[in-house]
Length: 445
Image (tube, rainbow, N blue to C red):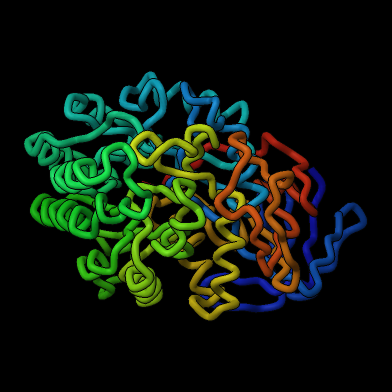
């Protein structure tokens, strides 16, 4: 692979914006400075007027392979990811078979090694019965452990207190948790079934999977982590009340308990159920405008550490069912960055802070080797963005296998010009150029 020189762009990295050139050779950045002089063999890419940010690292996606490939595959969804500026992902274990054995984990790595357009790793799923499998894991192979403390897509609810304590006490791996209290949800659901039968309005979703259900579960997980010294990461915080459980007194590298917010909880509120219906049914539920305000506040003051997508595609036929039968989740990786850039322009977050939360911090949290930053010697994963461009989301533009998006009809006020993965230009001007540039993520543990 010949050298590439990206020149005249504004680089956003480590809290600063500066105009510099980036020289890439093979899969690495070899030089960052002003006015780099190329040799005759170097490909020159003029990025005048554009910004360059590190490729996003999405620490929570559901790409559905194996077993649920009518919804998506590692290939299809990773292609959508690179079109959206996401160059690395960590995928969830609730596939078929579930990623709860070493054999199932190895199968996923094998599939991704042949088909992934982006860099990849996986979380290993904990259950009430597989503690022995967890204890055999190589901490340098797997990104971490995922526990569903509230039931979601797939039957992976971990509800045995003894098992939870054993897992929390026995592993040095990061434990990522989905926190919703099952007893509270069942009680709320029973109430609305008695009132509406099968015709529960979608507007009741945030009342069924309520603020209290989230807070009870999150607070219990945090309490257990503090007791056991476990490394805990709480996925998709959706309520203002939960943000009070986290502090901002330490640097991320020193925190034992961290949290994440997802793009849909930052974009949609319960006012959107009327228009969007079950298309914005997620677990945890999209909640109130006040909750969203509190999420943005906690993200900016560093109580919330990461931004992710929780990309979770279902077919449109599945989503168009009545409330009780419509699955939770939706496709987001192609448009997460664009939605966040809109929030930058509206003053909800700075571009530097966005890069910190979506690029740098996932690399720090998971101890990912040489990714998440624009640095010499690091892998050349980056995105060229046009903050003066526009992107209209149409059905024809979607790359998700499921073929729909909750953002259809939205015109974002930015544009992703180019995406690079491991030094290769994989996406440009709306076209995917290379679909197998991804590499397995490695960890410095």
